[in-house]
Length: 549
Image (cartoon, rainbow, N blue to C red):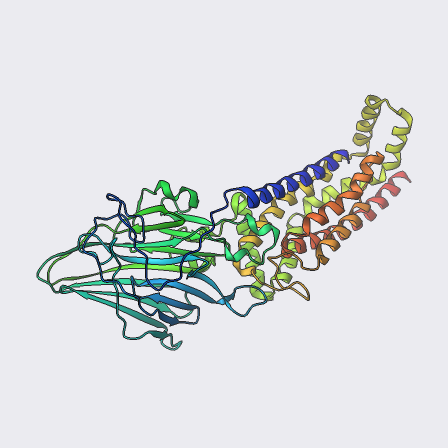
């Protein structure tokens, strides 16, 4: 029992240290400088020191300046998006996700991309190079047949064309939105009707400032553990994270089927180049703005010819089934950490249960039961050992009274008693050791899975991914933990007995800020364990009585 107590204390200390590290990082580690970008409807341009571009256009040799003017934004409305496109550059400067509310109690959609006085986060693309229409002096100003587009569900898709014409070259930049889908298709058609060959490169990038992750506004204390930064992947190297602080070091990667992204809690935006060319991935930082994107190889369009370049933008929730077809490894932005194999299996089972039950909370209850059944054999051996320890507790107390302070003699007789009674005192540690990886894997699964964001259970639990607002579940969990202790053999040492009584309170306090779904799992697990242990205690007691008779 002393070893079990030590393990419980070590677990409590580790959780405490983990929470303190998170709190320190939130308060002191690398807080970004406060920025206040000016709201504008025009794309910014920056100077080009020597050959390195530091603004909205990647590093290229500057060509002739493109026309630039203030223009009205183009609105796009689909079943999944509210989109605004800036005709200057043709960038997506606003994207609200209609199927995800900003907060649990709001009816406004979650805004992923925006460019205003509080935050800069946009998806940009263009044509650069010798004859490129996007340069350090300005961006191309497109025209469009309409300023407002709406997807007709019966049509299945919606195309938003943007046209730029100059010197006999017509550039048609087209966004295609598909009903029921987050991936946005982008195409550049370069139609060269001039007498000269056209040369340039396509680029696509994400630009973001140092503003905080808006997805954490209603997540409480432990929301700060999630990742905000860049990521990229290729078929040979599917998932890599890159902190904003490392963007200035650059990224020297070439890929034909890769992706670049900015990742935040629950949501991601990512560009994937066409597999028709090998793209160069890049990152850079300019002031308080961070860029991650790709450049195509140099494209040549002979006079009288045309060419079409394609790319895909994913800007939405981190739903693995929807990201996986976009690019290999993009679904790994649902980052479960070191215990990802456990988290992935748990989510697959939980998702399967949810398809039948329709409620994530009750799905967690069923998942807990499945885990208990899967671990029944080990748990049963552990409970039998603890029941035998409980039965021989009077004999252990007698040995303590007999030997007093002679710990050596007492330990020798205790070990002999364990052998005679076929009791393994360490067997009681098994449930704790086995449950901790599952517990941590479930924690990261609940933290990272957008499917559980704002998912209700019953009554006051309206968001399983957030803390219990009334602390009812953590308190009840502490009660179940205390009752479960009463079913276990009690320590013979008075100090250890007091520590064991305090532990349920300590764990209940820890659980106050954990996601309600995780506390629900632990509470239901305690209830199932109590029933199991009670039945085992009764059976072992009968066997011990029969043996003595």
